Amino acid sequence: MHNIYNFVSGPLVWIAFIIFIGGSIYRLISMGLLARKKDYAIYEYYSPFYAFRSILHWIIPFGSTNMRNNPIMTTVAFIFHICLLFVPIFLFAHIILIKESWNISWWFISDNIADIMTLVVIASCIFFLIRRRIRNEVNFLTTTSDYVVLAIVAAPFITGFWTYHQMPGHAFMGILHILSGEIMLAAIPFTKLSHMIFFPFTRGYIGSEFGSVRKARDW
Image (cartoon, rainbow, N blue to C red; front, side):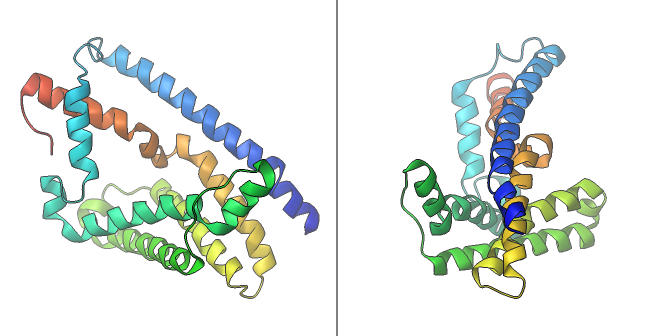
């Protein structure tokens, strides 16, 4: 068990970061070239103003008509994304590990708040799962990969909560927690999780087309 822990918390961490960074750069370059191939004028009419205007409306809760028409989904989605990003970055246990490795640290949230935000992420994943099953228009578009991605996202939070509260088998869960976090990191560039990388570009492209060409709003 100790050897597995050392491997998962050592070399595999670096491998996960290399895949994430290398994969993200590769996807950005390949998608950029593909966009140019599909539309040779894409970068000519790209407008930073209209791109930023569109992005701003889509990162503000209820900033678009679609969000206002789906208030429950909008609320859950925004809270989910905030907790999803906040917990791993500002968790005290994670910052301590970084401090020990590279002697850098930053502000952190209390364990109680981290607990609540972790449960919010888990509950949100359950909500998304149920929504995919019961909403016909969503279920129609759902594939197996969507369930796999949902499991990839939920796993680090479930195992982390389990480990922190030292439930039965917490030592094994601790290893699964590290491993699932690495899987999630490596999966970002190559799954639908890549929307966190591409969002500024895709939204900026749509905003530019609507603003510069169609003279219309896209929110």
